[in-house]
Length: 278
Length: 278
Image (cartoon, rainbow over all chains, first blue to last red; front, side, top):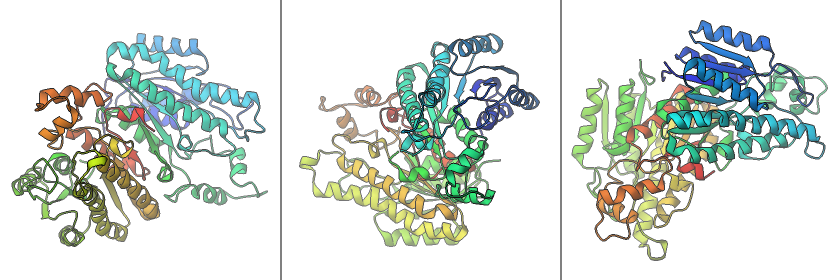
């Protein structure tokens, strides 16, 4: 696997889950890190979000792996906070080579019953948050003539999916943003790509609301029932992948091995994508 | 230690170009490698020279120079009988086939309105039926071992239409359809099947007079220098073509443990052409 010695990576949503895994994998391979995450819950999100203590733990683990780390609480909806983080990160480490726009939320509602607030939070975080993150590093990377941007989309960005229409819309939007930015940055030595995971074993799906969604006719169920319901989605018959499996694809896209890959969406999706056009 | 230590790899069209490079890269990372090629020198309808026996010998020498075992079989991918025989002999010597790279292919040029039937038929026979003939005898061997990695070479012309290569585009779209279907059929038995979609690559398929004429129809006898800007105009990143190593990087990633949960996917080391596509 590639070395990221001397590289600096910005990762949003780094408090736990996929973001923490990306941070630790970059740290193990020699990168310095600029990290952020939220420190509060949202009414429209049916599970608890990352806390300051989660981010602190990611920092500890990354430092133990040998990385220099700058971390702060920042909400990807907050342009000033992101721009400030990027500016301070460049001050500290001299540059940002890699940006992983990973922060995201999930929610459950049919479109018919969806509130403006649920729709708004989803688009603000999962789509506009990616835009604000990537925009914040764009002038710097274009100016240096080097950059690797990776956004977390989803395998549902290749199809429709009931009960999560706002999530699906945001994740399709991420692919449109990534492909357009890839074209704009092609002359500047910057590649822009996305990963499209299937279900990942994190707090986003391992919560009561999502288990109820997957087993709507059951008052009681076991973890085995949940695993069986998730497995049915995936041609490779396991319920979900681990955050590290997504990190493998993120690190590949950030490496020199992918220098001529841009505007691409890589599905780490247990074959779900075999049923779609892309 | 390489990612493919002890693995047995088979590459079709391995005498030169992308196929030879994939073979060498796998050998460099610890694999024993078998190559199949027609080494026919010429194929009807193909305006550039096809690999010769000396090319195949040279590939074997280069694999062995990496300290790995090499096998070479002469077979035309259009012949199910020849392919079945070649694969059986390789499987007998190697004991198994862990990785299959379906790489053999041709490119010819002409508008559909005046296309000779032979031009169409040879294209479909080599690029599409040839891919089936390569996969067909190998898949049962992989299923027997409960492990396999299949990577097939399609093209950006497998995701879009292109003037003057309608038969090539049809063969490459068809290849993606076959591989996605295969991925679903074998997903529960340890075998993944994926596709790479390059744009132009620095190989003999690009560097010949008919290719130059395709890209510079305005000139009577275009040279490589005339063609380079036209090659580049098709791409998004400012390069005329990718190098064979860039394609190998993507092939080896898809064959590696890092991509174990990626199947039925297309990956485009295509200098960003895919940014204009799904």
